[in-house]
Image (cartoon, rainbow, N blue to C red; front, side, top):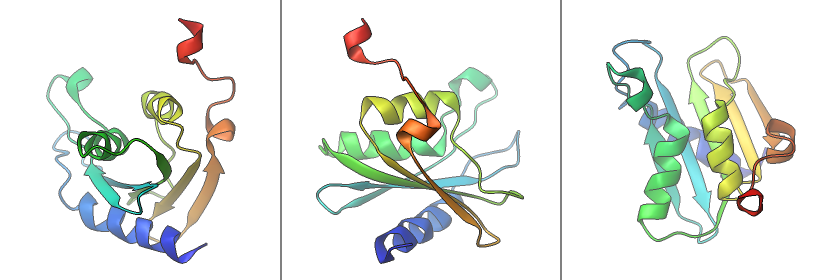
Length: 130
């Protein structure tokens, strides 16, 4: 694990405390690294209408995009689960859209697992498929 990977995990740990998760009670934090070197954070934000819930990963990605970033290189996800939690399908598709190649999943127990996007979402849907 690189120093930057460790920093991404720490940022994701910090932001997970701001999660709004009254229904699942699971707090998740994410931190995405832009090519500029800046880190953008996000947490899960639940809603009583579950389809309006936004995952931590997408919150972080959308924050980076809203700040004008165009190239995102890595993303870390942290939760207080038994194993490092993988991103959901919707988040995987958003990661594919913005070419985030490295995903680091971690839990509060200190376990981590890194996967590349192709492992997480092989043969992903792409704009060329439209």
